[in-house]
Length: 70
Image 1 (cartoon, helix red, strand yellow):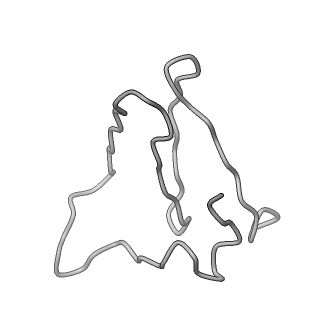
Image 2 (tube, helix red, strand yellow):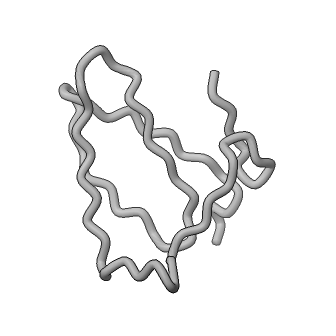
């Protein structure tokens, strides 16, 4: 993919709501940086199977993710 290794930071909120579709295999995270509560709705396209999880987790400071929190 031409976007492999790139980071896209989106700032969504009350003034700028949005809907995201995150493709399989894309590392992603969510963080509330506002003063008010955040509502995040996750709608997976298949039922989670704990015997065969479709997730992989890496630490936020991993070299696999070229982004650092400020």
